[in-house]
Length: 169
Image (tube, rainbow, N blue to C red; front, side, top):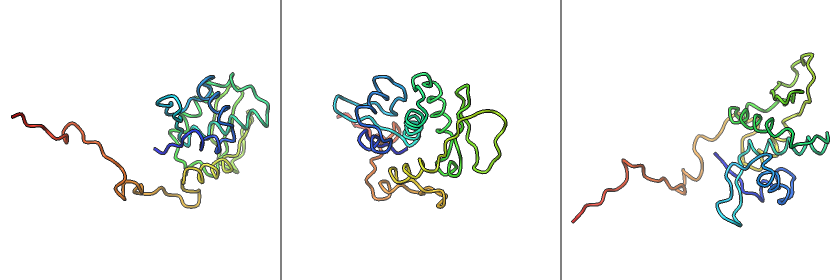
């Protein structure tokens, strides 16, 4: 799983670092994936959390929606996104129903008679693709091997079975 620190998350969401900290820590509207380890260290975010934050910014800025009342809905959206592939989201719209439920709708699919607020995902996915170096909709495939592990920069911690044993003298 790839993470970005607070400064990059701020850039990707369009929020100032202070507003991002307010939303993810103080108000805990959309919590960070990894909280700061110590004072002064950055929180870390996955692409799913950044996408939820971008949706929240859009709802606040374009629709003047009070976000605190939708805290549970944002948690539900993040849970749904964890079960989705980044690639599978291309060409879809996100629908927010009146009861705070989210659904993913294919572009071109006729809408049912139910009311919903529709959000095009592709513009947000383009920002995430560039910020996280993720594949686009046309590529359709993730890398088989991550570059840090191929080049030996990934440290693998030994498991209990692999841990070296010390001999007593």
